[in-house]
Image (tube, rainbow, N blue to C red; front, side, top):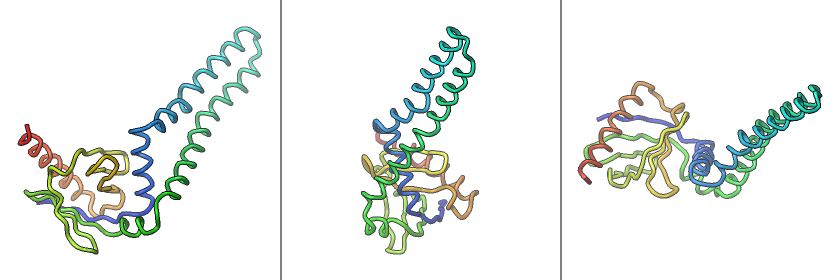
Length: 178
């Protein structure tokens, strides 16, 4: 079956935690509020100011403030979240997680090879698969996942074959459960 090799870095661990927080908590909602909703309200206020007082210069200042808010506040929140994550993850955990990985799709499950050895992850242990712009996450628990950074995969064509085989194997497992 197909296989891929990649290197997992500390930044991938931080990005997984951010992705998980964005998808499963108040952090994602808060980012949306500060990126879209609050600036939208400020834009409506700027429109009101321009229409009622005919002060276009003030309206432009308010619009600029809304634009800066929509970029600045989420960036500040993201920076603070990354700092928090880096404080919470121990160096020991990071050292255990980072390194070179090889994943191979087999009939029984996903064979994970690292410097410390091989481990078979049975298909039923993979709860869900999520794909972001830069990563693929294979959830093994509520907040635990195999992290596959797409940019660190050695062969891009191998990833496409691997991903298709992975999807097919997971669909087959889910069909057998039903």
